[in-house]
Length: 563
Image (cartoon, rainbow, N blue to C red):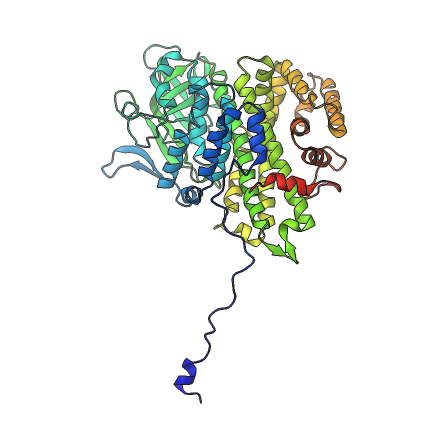
């Protein structure tokens, strides 16, 4: 038997292994400097004057403490207090401080207002570049920021209502207090369109609005009904659709009335969403809530459509941002992790996957920034206005649709650790399924494309002219453009059923041709040729990582990650 002294001298056996061959957290880098495709698109589309500001903001977004805000805002999700402890109706949503910090940052940077307060050439481009980087940190708080940004064109249709609220909407102040608008320096704007029985079919809405005194634009109405989705309930003002005697109409409904009393807009519950967890979406009831009519009675959809168009644009940008956030983290991982005798980034098949994912990101950000330029110029240029009308619907459908598979593939690049909730990837994946549905699902976008072409044929002429700028740059693209032209020429408006049945096929082709045309004109040959070969060649539909032989994956990857 060993003595006690001998036991004490035995080696300690607690250590089972040394942690090695694992990646580090991606932080303390510049999101703008690391993204060559973003920088080039900003410069190309008229935002070069904002380069220094974008570099500054890109550095801020890449800091560890800023990235952590996104994790905290989603870990500690919103909670609703319908009443205070005394029984007073308060409809108060409580958020983690991280959410408030991100909201404050977004508003101070002008993500809700800069194109309206400083409408210089390229203003939408620079604002989209900032929004793209902010969304890589956290997507949920972008909902009220986007709606506030997008509300201005609709509210301006009723000047006396705009005079009441516009200055505070555009102010770079974030005030989360649940108090009347007069007590705030800055306010945010939400939106309520969807009802249980209608969904995207807003003309099936049943909420009723009746004049409080006099009827007509700018007058006060009383609303009775519900909204199945109202985002975000702590906004100070909401654009709401409701029925009048003349049909569906648009109203500006405040959370608090001008006399300082709480409006009868009651939050029933917060929606338990699989993604976008930091953002409070709600069900509400209007029990005589008062709001001002914006535009003519019965013209609610045309009145609010400007807001919807801009929120759809931000959905495009947001989905592209999710792609970039995941791609940056996976590239960082694959440069550090080894398997089968080599770094993952140097394994031929992994290289193919990463290059393919990089192509998707570059095509998406090129599409987004081209549409940002269209927004900047649409009031002065008919071609740009036509692109803004048609290509926004195409891009919202396509880029948002590409997001979920892109996010999943990034998780697979990491392996088992990629599905762990203490990593970024599950949050990105859950977020990626939100934008394809919100602000009009895929079918709604495709039908909107058909509607725009049928109502204003000039939008299609502008679209084809835009992709035609790349003619002669790639034979596969030339063939795709010719085939697309033949399909449009063969359309018979009388055969609406067949046309709708094939709408996704048609819009798929429009989207890929648009992206390919941008890359052929502006990206290096390695990027443009690989994109066209993989998306327009004989192979066509494929999983990520099936780039054809001859694709210059090394050149694509060097371009994709400039850190």
